[in-house]
Amino acid sequence: MVKVTYPAYNFKIKAEAGKEIIFDEIRKQWVKLTPEEWVRQNTIQYLLQSLHYPASLIAVEKELKLGELKKRFDILVYNQHHQPWLMIECKAADIALTENVLQQVLRYNMALPVMYFFISNGESIFGWEVKSGCQIITDFPEFCIRS
Image (cartoon, rainbow, N blue to C red):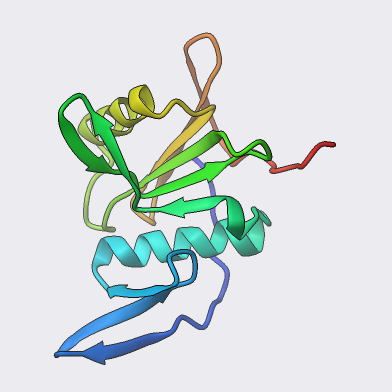
């Protein structure tokens, strides 16, 4: 399991039509604050503040195609060559990270291959590195830009 300490962050949250919404820095828009969105936003801040991943190389909730199906990944980080590098599937804190969640991110990886993928419910995070099969990893990879 990956150990994460989420950074303190002053999220922009407001009420609209009786519902809480949160400003997503990556998407540059207000989105409904669901339990899954709370995990997603904290994970994004961890990537930005703690790991110093470039915001310009992070995509959130973009569509991908699995055969005829249209799905959305939660978080995708591109490498310095703008190729998919790391994917994170987020679930609400009360959702167990089961084999089904792992299978979901593996299907996404078939459509959008990455070197690293993670599943998270905010409480637990599990990660894998794709190297001649999949190897469990216990930390997020360092992002470095090479010339």
